[in-house]
Structure formats: C-alpha cells, structure tokens
Amino acid sequence: MKLGSVRPGMVALFVLITLSASVLWRVASESRTELAAADGYRHDDRLALAVEHYRRAIRWSLPASSTTEQAVSALESIAAELEADGDLAAALLAWRSVSGGLAATRFLYSRTNPAREKANAQIARLVATDRSAAIDASLSTEQLAADHRRLLDGEVSPDPWWGTLLLLGMATWVGALVLLAWRGFDSTGRFGWAGARGPLWGALAGLVSFALGLLFA
Image 1 (cartoon, rainbow, N blue to C red):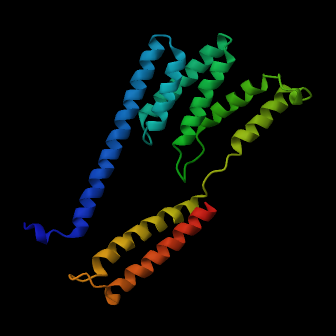
Image 2 (cartoon, one colour; image 1 turned 90 degrees about the horizontal axis):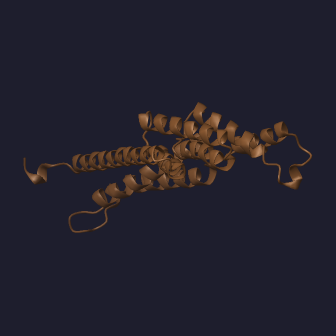
Image 3 (cartoon, one colour; image 1 turned 120 degrees about the horizontal axis):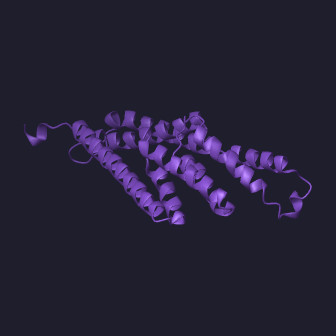
C-alpha cells in the first residue's frame, strides 16, 4: 500500500484509538499502583497515608472496575475502626474520601451511588456530633445531621442535556475546522468557497452549541 493512498480519516481513527488506549492503560495502571500502596500502608498501620492512597485509587479507577469496590470497602472498614478507637476526625476523613472519590468519577448520566449515599449519611452523623459551634446549640443531633445531609445532597452537578450539547458542540467545532483546513483550500493555498462553505457552517453550529452548553450546563 502506498503512503499516498492512505485516507486521512483512517490515519485520524488510528491516532484516536492509540491515544484512547494509552489513556485507559495509564488510568488502570495508576489505579492499581495506588491501591497497592494503600494496602501496604494499611498493613503497616499507617492509616492516614492509606486513606489518602485509597482515595486516589478511587479517582483513578475506570467504570465497573474492581479497584473502586476494593478501595471503598477498605475505607469503610478503616472508618469503622477509627471511630471505634475514638478518632472521629480521622473517621470523618475516611468517609469524606469515599464520598469525594466517588463524586470525582461520576459521569453526566451517573445514577445514585449507594456507597456514596452511605458515606454522606455517615459524614452527616459524625459532623452532627460536634456541637462546638454556638449556632448549633439549640438543635438536636438529628436536626444537625439532617441539615448536613441536605447540604451534601444539594451539590450542583452538570445538567446532562446541556453537558452533552457542550461536548458535541466542541467535537463538531474542532472537526469542522479540521475539515475546513483540508477542503477549504486548494493545492496552491487559495481559499475556495465551494469546498469551505459546509465546514464553515458546521464550525459555526458547533461553536454555538458549545457556547450554549457552557452557559447552561
């Protein structure tokens, strides 16, 4: 096969597949490394470092990866162990690592994660036991826990529809500009309206979609 006969689309597809495979391999590798480090620190009873690396393992993990389940299970066990020992601050950090780690890996259309719901409930319960703030003096522990739970559940997430429009608009915009550079100019570098008209309209539509998605997502 001659080099000149290779279509640009095939080259772009090969590059895209290669880059995607590289990213997936890096994510999986980092997740396994962080999980191994966390297990080592936990074995050495260095729980603060173990919690940190378990949280990183969750953030690096892929969807449906066993790494996430292992890290979450370990953090829940550590949190229960620390609370039993009376170290509520460290236990709270472990639960927050579960909730924060899972929140960092959610997608536009992610469903409610039971593990994160459980972590948020434990965070609210533990925070409510700290009655050092004068403003909380008149509230019961149950009321404080409910208030904190509402704050945890009231996070602002990207709207799925507008977020999708943003991503599609960005892809269309960039793709149309690439197509414009390929079809909008002849071999001498002169601009040709006939070949550039479609890509230009596509780039404009993609830019508008991207801007709307960025504004409302």
